[in-house]
Image: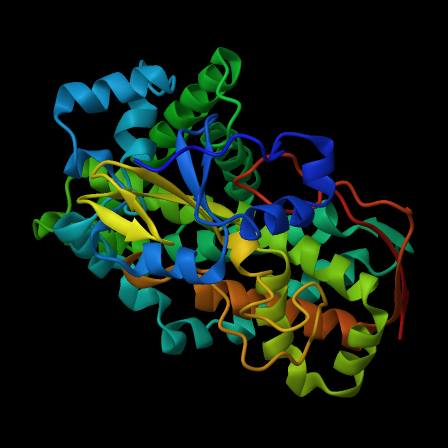
Length: 412
């Protein structure tokens, strides 16, 4: 087993890390091999090549169930305070995201067809009309919080419409999602645990009732298609709830975060905003750069199912790796001038959506949302400026996005 390195300062719950994690990441990249992080019991991979190798290696899995006996899995859950969460265990700790092999492939197949580029492209007019309506209701105000007043109202509502959730319920689903997801970060206190379990229970009861409504009266939505898949024997009842919950949670936080950090990047690099105003054809590459520059989901994990050699170190079966997408996407060995936002960066093979079997299912939809929002903003407002000197970012290792983004805007 390689020797753990404990002399590097790495404090992902600190204010300094929240405001600027990239010096911390650079220190990890500059350290030979991988770095052991005791708080998560993981070996951190920070360089682009190491992260890519781990997430594309079919010997790496998301779930411990492939490498440990049930009693070992239970012991690990107790050690990490993941135990005594019955609904969280059924619907969150098990999911399409945290499954592997046949189970993952089977569940992904049931929903994949509605997230292809062709299917997502058919939503453009609907999303544009929705965004126009939101901005129209805000444009008389000279100042807004871009995150709360605009960004927070788009991705969850759009994915909710695809699934079949009424618009008026989407704000409640966002709260549930945020309170559930917060427990995946480092601070897993009993208070945060109780919050996650309570919100998972409420989310489950809501989806169970919505499912019963669709069983009585099917519609042209994803819930109805998933009901048909379940009746055909392709998913269990728990898998149905878990998959619906995951899709709705994924449709909220990360896209809201990257919308906020994306606009912050344009405001930090005003010359790039001017480029986009002059050449709207750059918007697709600019959106990809927003995901690279501030990856909204900067941390994931994998377990080794057999002995592996990573970055010149040999790790035994069962080793847990922490893959730092946020660091990999700022690796100067992969991206020239990596700390600069470049709206026209080409090529831009970032890893914000992951790689391999767990490549993000909703990446086309997230990018379309962002393309429409930013194109509309730059068309309708001749001036967009920050109203506060400092933008406060969320604390944690698993999320990256501003708490708020107060802006002044002036219509064109």
